[in-house]
Length: 429
Image 1 (cartoon, rainbow, N blue to C red):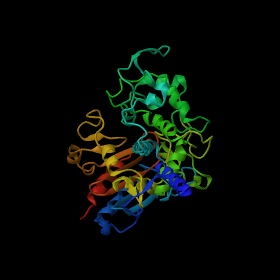
Image 2 (image 1 turned 45 degrees about the vertical axis):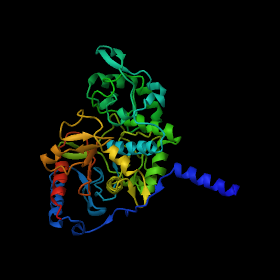
Image 3 (image 1 turned 90 degrees about the horizontal axis):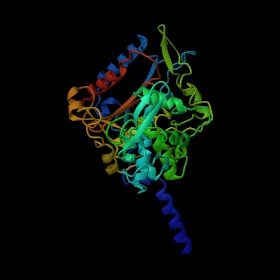
Image 4 (image 1 turned 90 degrees about the vertical axis):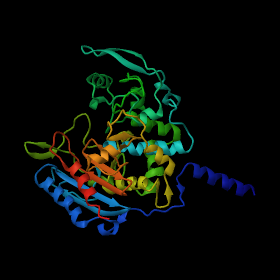
């Protein structure tokens, strides 16, 4: 009897720290014909023509696109070049740096732990990362020597603030405020795509010493808040962030090609970052980040805001889990009720005017946005990444759209809005 009780205790402990089976069992994404899910093959062919033309005209060097509806992949194609130097052709299973598309994955990890009752969304982050206690807001700044004064913030930064980019934390080298860029540069903040030996805890504790843009909760300021939450996941779970994602999210969903640092046997599928130079696509040089990320380096930095690389199919799988109400292949990642919270307006009118609301790491289309046309149905959730990747998922229509490219610098790329518009127009049911 004692042995049976012990086994039950072990089973209970394991269930608390792993994903649970679900009464529902939505199948993994699989190929299907457009007509089987109410998509017009003839209209979907317009996507073909558009992407082919964009590559032929030199607007983009290469692209992988995926469209799925009701769990069936009806379009998954690749065009152009994946490597500027070798001319390697783009393949559908190529791996892309998804940059800020990492944020939705980090937010999902946070909410998985929230479902376990580990914290409340309006807890101050200083309860778990004490370095953030008594935050300060930038008041005056001297450009000559970057000295500055601050005042106490009128409230503590909460987990909700970090999820919604309303914490007041900045974004270093891509910050919209030159003063913040100078301050982050001065302290040598390592924000993204690190190949040297640095850890997310180093970044987060350094962030805590810097002033905020504004009082928490009062404005939307795109920030490193999801990086703070990557470290927060480590603290709450007691696991390195990469391991948490692998064991609790990627493996259960079958996302075998999504990594912070690619295994050697996957490195050859990484797409080159390219830029336009005198009309020719070339490999992007080393700037504030190392373009060899994520195949070289110390492999110690797990950035929750921008660090992951993935494939079109892997990311579509992640989004399909959301469209399924938090379940895929019989594994319950999140409750349907939790997803309702994630997909609700969390920041009032601080984001997107009347066309988009902002939830917990997703932008979401409003009725006014639907009326604008070409963007999807109400509740369509979207985001993109720094290296020119985009996604959208329309819960009402059951549609997922993924567009993967890897470019930097000024480009005349119209494929993002065209793709979304053409996919919506292909629905035929």
